[in-house]
Length: 288
Ligand SMILES: *[C@@H]1O[C@H](CO)[C@@H](O)[C@H](O)[C@H]1NC(C)=O
Ligand SMILES: *[C@@H]1O[C@H](CO)[C@@H](O)[C@H](O)[C@H]1NC(C)=O
Image (cartoon, rainbow, N blue to C red; front, top):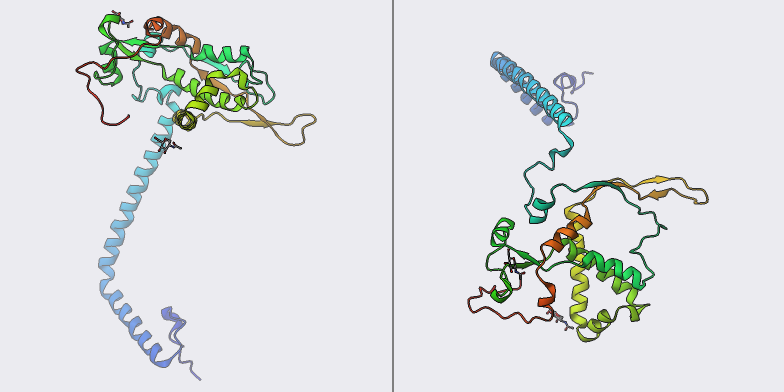
């Protein structure tokens, strides 16, 4: 008994079940054959062209990848830094590259003069880091920094110049604010200013806390640290122990403080100073 599907497999049709369908299938297949027969020479030519285009594209891709790899390997370590993304600042111009290699002493149980429990001495160390400004900047420096010349200036009787503070001092101040917020709970007597702010301006103090977390998050993400924390086996410790003493290229913070000192306006004359709004002051409509 001849299979009603006997002719189907050779056309590559294997799943049609009904007579009418198999008939339709055969017609379709016949149609393909016909089309195939008539278009063979044209298809061969097109296939040939596509074949060589594909070869050409492959060769270009391979050469491109080799060139990228070679240029990546020969790129100096400072290439990223030399990407033209440097932002000008007066401190950078004055200090130049004062970076040095430093291995962080970040071991979990490591002593640090900035760690609690809080004492007058520890607080004095933090004070030293944030003992900065106000700076006295020229109009030329303001313009190079990209700051508006409508910014606040010292009044003429103090000699003029634009007021500014180092961002690093602001950021360390923020880190200290978090440290202070924590230690105030157990040592309120060591933080009288914070106690007063908490009592008289609870809302601002709360917003200041969140502001500071965000300032530090921004800064840490901006200079996202791509060093790698590895792990060691330690006697008496059951699991892998993190090795936080990573190597870094660091700014010379003390040199920055020295530059700041040199460029300061007289802080004493500004102590308790009530800034008068100049008649021609250009005011922003919203807090920046
Ligand atoms: C700022 O510096 C200028 C000189 O560049 C000086 O004349 C002026 O008195 C200084 N202003 C203050 C407030 O220290
Ligand atoms: C705190 O200050 C913010 C911003 O001015 C305000 O939206 C909010 O209502 C204040 N909250 C309290 C409890 O005063």
